[in-house]
Image: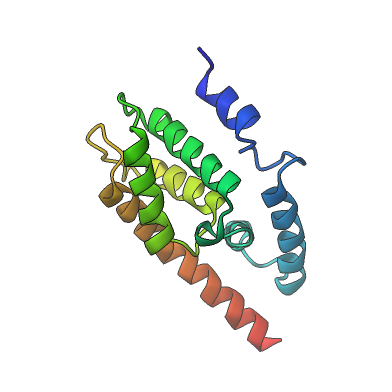
Length: 159
């Protein structure tokens, strides 16, 4: 059985430092652009958050990207310790939910939102990956995302 780490880094190319993923190339350019806007006094976390906003939005995913999202949902279930892997119909409903209500987010933002929720001890999944669970996590992430966008626009307009 493959480890979650090997699945995430090799099969799904989640490692943000991997030069092979399209999302990483977009994020690298975005990061360079953001560094030009912000000086050294601004938070590295802010630049990282803004960098992750760049990339393909879930609502615009191609079929291949939707398949990758389905794999990510399965792997996130394992990562979160959910014992029963969601069935395909359930995964389709989760994807539709994400596309409908969180479609302007990127796949990388979904991953980060879950990691941050774990870090903040906000993860209560009751052994099932549900739209309510994803919604709660993304709403928490959304607060920080909006702060980052506000700060970016404020600095950009002050220039």
